[in-house]
Structure formats: C-alpha cells, structure tokens
Image 1 (cartoon, rainbow, N blue to C red):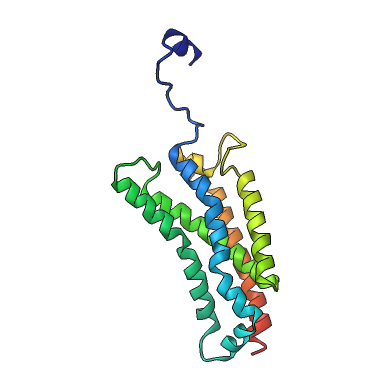
Image 2: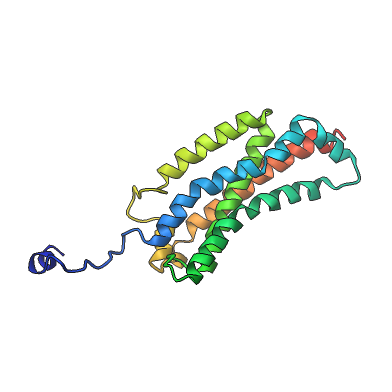
Length: 199
C-alpha cells in the first residue's frame, strides 16, 4: 500500500479485510440504542410490578404467561423502526452495508439480549427508575467495550459477517442467545415464585 501511494498519491486505497464497513458501523451505533430502548419498553411492566398490579393480574383469568409474553414481544419489536428506516434508505439507493435480512437477524438478537436483560433487572430491582439507570449504564459501558464505536480487537462476529465468514464463527451468536435464555429463565422463575404462587 505505501508503494501504491508513493507512485500515485491520488490512488484509491482498497478496503482491507479488517476495516469497519458501513454495516458494522450501523450495527455498532444502534447497539446502545436498542439495548436502552428495551428498558423503556419494559417500564410499564416494572410499574405494574411496583404498584401491585402484577399480583392482581396473576390472580385474574388472564394467563401470567400470556401477560409476560405480550410485554416481551412488544419489547422485541423495538428493532422494527431502525430496520424499516434502513429498508427505506436501501430502497432510496443508499449503501447500508448488510442485507435487510441480515439486519433483521442482528437486530432481533440484540433486541432479545436487551429484553432479557431488562426483564431480569426489573424483576430483581424494586424501583423501575433504579433498574433503568443501572441497566442503561451497564449497556453503555459494555457496548462501548464490545466495540460498537471502535473495534479493540481485529475481528468480531459482525466483522466476520461483513467478510462472509459468519458460519465459521457462530459461537458468539450461540453464546448471546444462550445468555438471553438464561436471563429470561431466571427472571421467569422468580416472577412465578413471587407472584403466581402468591396469587
């Protein structure tokens, strides 16, 4: 590359394998906002729990599982607005990096992780405001350290997807899904113990 620039200073430098593409930057910047939006969407659930409405709901004919599933699915829909925005930008001719299907999968994984984490904190912390502040702080710190703005390591799962090597590096995706299921399971068991068995 230095020889190319010495011969022709105006030469266009080809993209390197470890360079962050448009898609990696988009996912990185949205990582924090998708995580924090999960706490925003779970706030009504936290208020129901704090005000004792959750105990009444558990004693009503409404299934507790359906009530919790409705909140969780509503929170998962937090990835829809940025996904629609990217679809519109792609239709308008902009380079958005990844395909719409790849974005849907990545956003869904991030939304699942954020929703499970929000449910876990709102389950164990009584005050919704305290859970929101702690959760938002942890999301900002962990997202920054994971490379949402700048990659501290040469390779990560999103960059592997950018380079067409996603199938060779499935462990991070499996790890995130397993962590999400574990957090959801812990929160679900505690909620059933605290509210359904008392109802």
